Amino acid sequence: DARVTQTPRHKVTEMGQEVTMRCQPILGHNTVFWYRQTMMQGLELLAYFRNRAPLDDSGMPKDRFSAEMPDATLATLKIQPSEPRDSAVYFCASGFQPGQAMIKGYGYTFGSGTRLTVV
Amino acid sequence: RKEVEQDPGPFNVPEGATVAFNCTYSNSASQSFFWYRQDCRKEPKLLMSVYSSGNEDGRFTAQLNRASQYISLLIRDSKLSDSATYLCSAGYIPTFGRGTSLIVHP
Image (cartoon, rainbow over the protein chains, first blue to last red):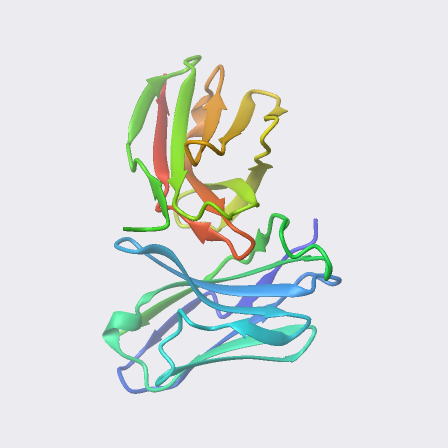
């Protein structure tokens, strides 16, 4: 089965440090999402790319978070500086959205996530 | 108020039982609906799509009620292995509920 690959699986860092999370979407998928999951908030959308273009990052704290997709095989999510409240599991998901059919979407495949702990 | 709401449960049922979950969504323009399953400390995995006409996959049936803006998941003949959290999503840019926990006991 094709997989979405995320690295690292676990990250423990000190407050104030930069954190970079990486995601390799499934080959042929043109859509990438970044979600954050916590017990309190559930899955929250952070960023959304289609054909490598950022389309929605309204859920992302802009002062410290940034998301990029330098090529079709790599999406990154950076936090600088990190804070304890950023501790969560960060998931990347990929899928295919046809360009013309803006209404209906398709299900998405999630990576295994990066479990981030900021101390 | 979250855009997608689910009863967190847990739903505690014996093997062989039939169990149903509902999920309400607030954006009436949503067109894409899915159910995902998430095991403890794992990623969500796509379970099935949800259509107005209903969608059945083995023991699982998903339904969409546009008038009342909810989707449902019915699990028949529950197995121990069905124990997990079930997440619903709504919208072209998926918004998720917090999930409903299902525990199937012997």
